[in-house]
Length: 101
Image (tube, rainbow, N blue to C red; front, side, top):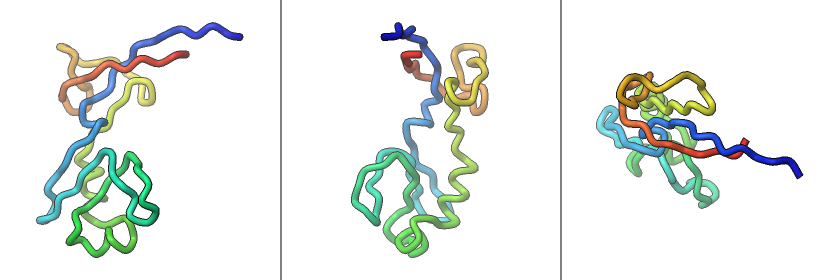
């Protein structure tokens, strides 16, 4: 069996979740329930008043929120933290994650 090395990588706090106000609607990113299947997933969701999201699981509010959301992860995107352990894209706080590689 191969040996694993534990590596520490940084992840922007926004990758864990957040919410944005877009044209009067609240878009959230995080642990949501899929409206079609009722299963939990880590994805975007728009509020209950949005008919586009209710029927298509996508809407213009979610598309706009995706442009506002940093979601930087060093393991996936590469790069190094900015000075003071800040996200190199948005400047928000970072959290450490450990991976077995």
